[in-house]
Image (cartoon, rainbow, N blue to C red; front, side):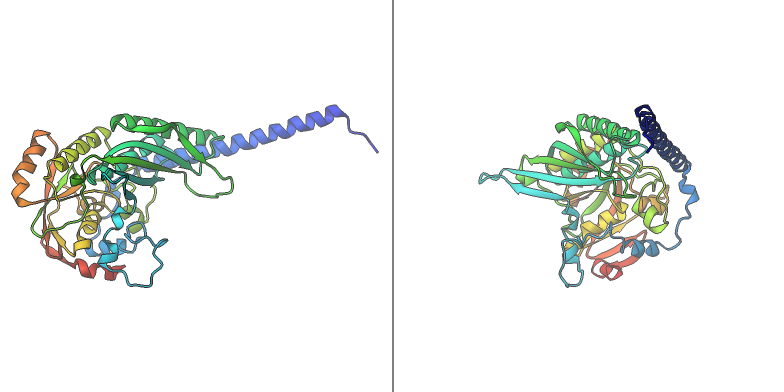
Length: 380
């Protein structure tokens, strides 16, 4: 038997480590190149390359079967009952919970949101968008956001790309918390990584805690009264980036993040806080998944009401109705309070758009009827 010299074993060990380092560096370099190419593709994206659909109803009924836009939680609803407006009613609040703390009526609110778009190439902005969405939603409930925590899933923080995502998300979380006056739980982001998760995109989840300072200020997303006027606070943009419409209807997943400006978010959130405090709005809904149309639909369903709106002639209808650009809130206002409502917005120099009014149940867009809300579920 030939004995292998110790120095040879040592050399083999070093060689093995060297090969491992080369393999690791090669795979990392490949990911960096792939991410660079993907980022370049997204930056080249233009809405002008997307053909605007001729029939709006085709888009509506196509998106109605999108699981991300369904207001039914299929994982928790095992009943065999048919889907109805009643079962769809409070679905938009499934991410939020109101808790009564004691017999004195003190309440707190908790909301949880997740986001996976663009964490690989722009984790800071992606995280700022997520925190902005969460705080805007909570303010629309009439609660005051207080503290936020974050959890990063499906990243390997021992990998340079994982470090890039983690550090960017941390900056985004801290910047958003400072802007919205939030405390960060433990001042860190928790991690979760499983090497065998496969092609699962990195995801960040934030949990936001808030307090209800005055219970009479609690507001819902639901339209309650026919004839109320509907306004959009904020400005619509010709933007469909990272929207359910673009991904589900057109099949395009590589696009830029939705238009976002954190200064505008701060301004919009300040004004909704004041409007709710003055009791000038009957309902408030942040424009979220599905864009303006599905925000209106979620507000109309519970009471079997509808809406009659006019789109902005200067913006493509698909972008106006289904784009998910940030910094927008839908409210309905009693006609008797409309003058004071407009005065507040004008005084705070906040842009707004008069959409239309709440109907008895019909959905009308630009003087074209799309049926009634109690029939819309037939498309699901």
